[in-house]
Every structure is written in C-alpha cells, then in structure tokens.
Image 1 (cartoon, rainbow, N blue to C red):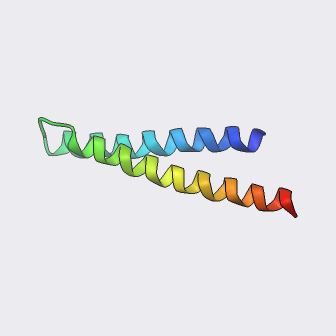
Image 2: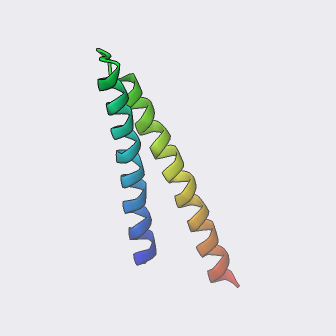
Length: 65
C-alpha cells in the first residue's frame, strides 16, 4: 500500500516540477498569460500518470502470479 502512496507523491511532484519549469519560461519571456506553466503542468501530470499506470499494472501482474 505504501508503494502507491509513493507513486501519488511522485505524480504530484512531477506535476509541480514541470509547472515550475513552465513558470520560469513564462517569467523569462515576460509572457502575460501562463501558457507555458499550464502546458508544463499538463505534461508533468501526463508523465506522472503514465508512470503510475505502469507501476499499477506491474503490481497487478506480480500479485496474480
């Protein structure tokens, strides 16, 4: 069960890291709208979800064998 708690933290941290990178891009280019931050958050969330699903499927395979 702790494995999935760690994955939840990993999902949140990847979202925050990519959103932070997007924020830095927005700040560097002095953009009025936060498109890079929103895009970074979406990319981070998508990558985190891919990893979460991969680990969940791996755990399901291990428990069925």
